[in-house]
Image (cartoon, rainbow, N blue to C red):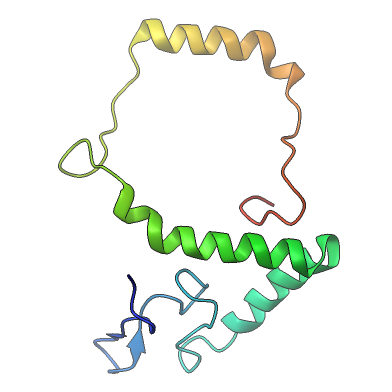
Length: 123
């Protein structure tokens, strides 16, 4: 389980707490560090209000709750396949050519993805 409160991290220059949920809710909806970033709460509320205006509170709050839960729970389920967790490599020419050919033949048929009402993962 996760602690009821977010863990404090202190700004080395001012000694002021800073960390998760300061600039945008990641693990908890209640933003912290208002003394360092007072405008962030307004930005988040504006972000959510845009969703509410378009889709309604029920849909938006449900997806927002899911996003926050996933932000806390998902990292523990991830597996690193290298010591750094990723490795950037050039795609083999045969694979790249296959993907490029597919894109060239089909890019004019692209259409916008449909996401459920209130989904806040994409805008």
